[in-house]
Amino acid sequence: MRSPGADPGSDTSDDLVPKGPISAGQIFQMIRKAATSRAEIARATGLARSTVSQRIGVLVALGLVLEEGDARSTGGRPATRLRLNESGGVVLAADLGANHDRLIVSDLAGHVLAEQTAQRSIAQGPELILGWVRDNFLAQLTQLGLGVGQVVGMGIGVPGPVEFAAGRAVKPPIMPGWHGVSIPEHFADAFPGVDVLVDNDVNIMAVGEHRTS
Image (cartoon, rainbow, N blue to C red; front, top):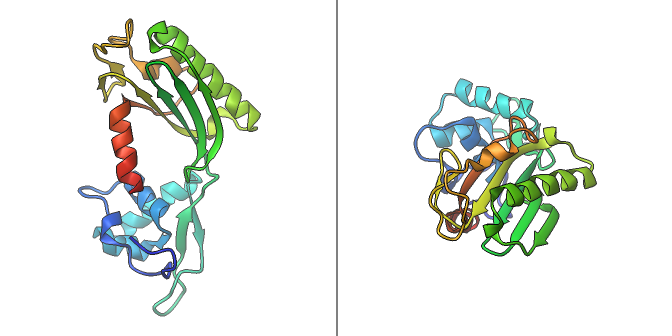
């Protein structure tokens, strides 16, 4: 990974390159980790320049990535430097524990913009707990002067097994009344079009440790 003082026009490090087919989302993660250019991404991923430009065009159109004309040039027209647009949207995160809840609104760089905690038992059931999460996320956005349209994603961790693809709780031993509940469906009306990813809280912690190590 590039050191803090490295030239922003230097080659993208191998540890930033996703494995397998490269999507626009994976290119976004590369840019999020280190400002780079189209040429660097093409070299690192092996994608054609036209493919890279098309996928970056999507990210720019969504306001997730900014273009700046100050990357190092090897001759001819200066390369365009790509960087994360930290204020291009917000992410909502909920940590639902056995006896505690923590809600966070962050920008795209992971900076916490709002946070709320409460001592609540997950055994109160999905209607009460998820209704509280929904209402408080909406209240946090209002306090920040933001709208639902600025939410680019939501992540929820729960203390039990989850069918990840559907975000559905599966026979969670300490979550009575949650079996078979599709958690994303509880947010569909309030946050239309927003992807809601749900997983076991331990899995999420492991992913977080990996991404930030």
